[in-house]
Image 1 (tube, helix red, strand yellow):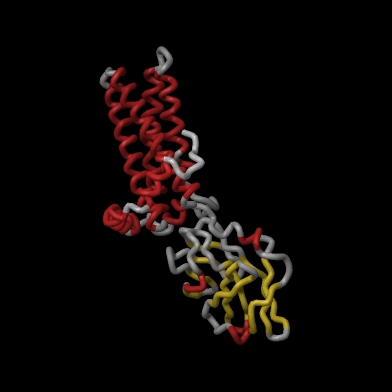
Image 2 (cartoon, rainbow, N blue to C red):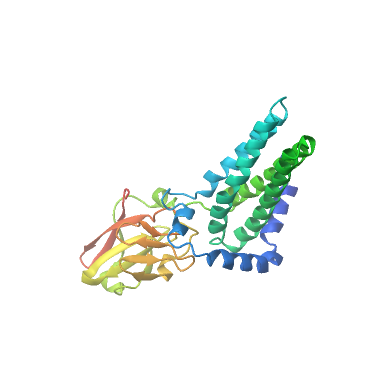
Length: 292
């Protein structure tokens, strides 16, 4: 369907209505609280993908989608019923860890992302159910029904993938919201205020050009500065809390080391752009670090 020069077409209008569907909020809150209450401990950061540098969910979903699509191809060839059934079974098994990582990420998103994400999960759950039915039918020797259910499952997976693409590319779910800092901060040193402007241990918001930064003065007049917009969802770190040389985002609890911006705790999977600092004539100056 070609885009209309007059504005968004039916698909985009439907997505927009879904983003604004406040009727989903009660279900969103219930499921979100359940996911956040899971006793995952340090595994929560593993599921977020902090060790990988970006979400794990997009990596894991390739397995069920790939195996199910391959099964559909084999269903079109003679003598491949058993192989197609094996691929469907592998896809069903792989859907579980993919879904878990998706739920953990989803629980730390904004309201509009959560609405779309809840429908995305429901659609994908329907696809898994259809493939489960397809596998059962095949095991009982009803290959025709198995193929029909598999094709229906693949069609539903396509809808779920479209919703996932909207989440990732239109709503920036899982994207690094601080990536643009390195391209927008000018080179060299920039003054952000006098040392006396910064109370020890209290994060303060300043600007380097148009880029907001959070400045924290520690004991001994050591000063640190990071990009203020959290890499996870853009939360204002200057409204967060400082403890043990780190700042915690007030929105979803990501923790960043003040010295270099490293994300020591999720859900953020990307570090925070950090600045070198120096004091010249009682004035604090900052310069963007080249990297960690």
